[in-house]
Length: 297
Image (cartoon, rainbow, N blue to C red):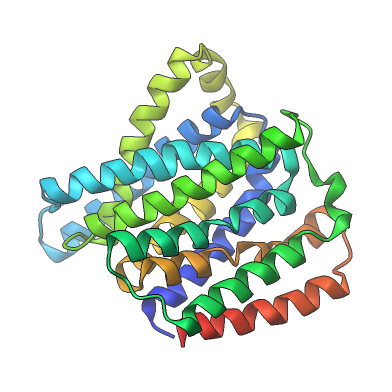
């Protein structure tokens, strides 16, 4: 297992932890997206400044080609995709939302094959199907009905629709990111994607008339105690490690391993919600690990 695969699994674990915190944050989906993009961009800017100072290199090295593709990736994958996922999370709760997000590897494999000439062997295809199927089986355990936070309710159809749109955007964003990172450091790539998304989200939130309420909530200490850790774990570390995964592994493999997030979420749901880990979760986890092995082998 190489650097890209390890980074993808780490990012999946980070995002699992953050999803439970994001689900309990009293912000609209667009408000959460704006807040986490701004905070994570500032962290990444500081990180990039320290790294460039230590190496004696320029802080920004990406060319116009990288900026174009990474900006597009940020708008589609983060600004739109994350907002859709947050909306799905608010309606369905963590595990049910993650059921829908597991469709991303399928979209990514198709896009990687069509746009990047990445081969999808029989073994990789079987691994993707086994991993995705196992994750769906695990998180579809019926005892997740009471996990919806209830802060911004909506219909099940709306939740599923938002989740599928988020998965498609994640896959498209991953392909664009892969193209844009050919000669770009993952930290700088993460900063470009997030900062562009922050600007876009700002204008959307302003257009929706939510800017005052969102900024008021974002300076509330009670909300920040839960929100900032989610940003650090899920957005800063999660997106940084996912960029490493996209740079060092094929899109289909990277996004399949990123889709193992529900498996990491199961023990966390046990801690946060007190749900017993069922036999379905254990067997499904083993099958998913087998599928991951087939993908990365």
